[in-house]
Length: 392
Image (cartoon, rainbow, N blue to C red; front, side, top):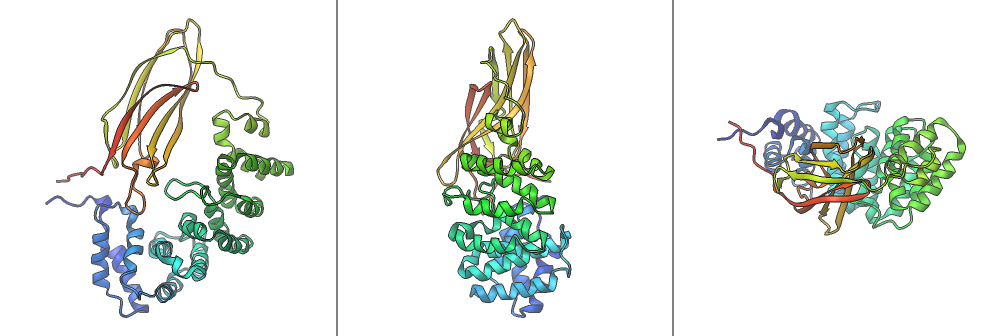
């Protein structure tokens, strides 16, 4: 019989058993042995990184069916396990013990909205929850969430303020985007206005990430906000602007160049090249295997020329929407008639990694190669279910 790979092995003693025994001290009816077996079953085919998520799902079946009663038990458990003074970075033991509670709230907490927000507040102070875990609450009732956030951004606990900054991200690789649900970003910008001057550098860094997404989703209001912020002239704000406009500079957005005082981006002419080869190892790509591709092209010019290369991955999201992701690959100056070859291994891409609910973007994908703004070649490929790794 094949052994379970170490990276997907659920450690009974360090995770499920320890958590189960601690909850049992608070809730004597908790069946630890059955709980551990259920978590092991839930972990089949999952990676070690999904342990806390699996525990959060299984907890629902081992606590009172009334969500509020179950949450009260878990928050008593949090009080018993949390360290007296919150720190910016919790110990691995604390995070392993408390992160499952955050996943439990994310999955089932809409049943008692306000109490769940209180629980998120407490957990975030110990840095044992992440901004993406409150996403469904924002989608359900953004106004109630933003009202609470308005209180939290003034809290003395930096971890709580960081949680708010992370929750305001309008995009996200492993979570639903807020853009379809929030037409007016002004409530988000009002919160970021406060957080941009936060004394904690971690919070300001997240503000820059939030503004990076807002500039993409709401470009006019995003740029207007950054232009207003730039007037204070502080070093911290200038850093936020540079981080927020990093992608826009990369793609040559003239408004970003002007705001950052970089002059004007270089205009590249259509490349005089011939694509020699573009291929992948396989047209069938298992989701848990690195995606590898290679290509070569040759300059047809008698003069030197600058070539800026991007690769593009297009795929259908779980919602049915088509997503086109564009990544910068390289920029170099080709000598006359020079031929160049590249190869690269990618893992993971947003579509090439399992989502936290066990679903993934399988099926049709397209890879394209772009040089100086023009697509010069591409191919279709299929992303398939995970490939089994046999271990002797």
